[in-house]
Length: 54
Image (cartoon, rainbow, N blue to C red; front, top):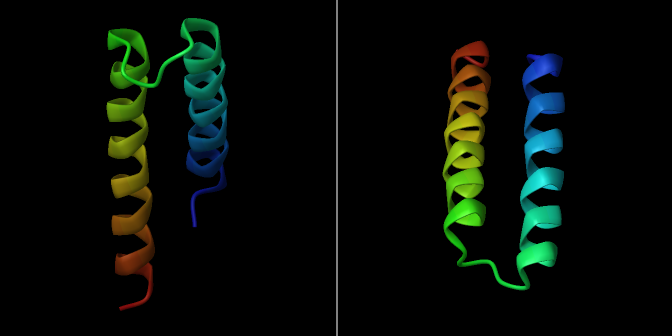
């Protein structure tokens, strides 16, 4: 498992939550952009995990 990727996921998740708290909503454009970036990283991590179990 790529530990750097997991760290990046956690950092981005924290950034997203922080931005949502600041904007007082989870549907602000900037929060949604961070959420989409986070989704991409999570999918990449899941694909790496799936390939490593084959």
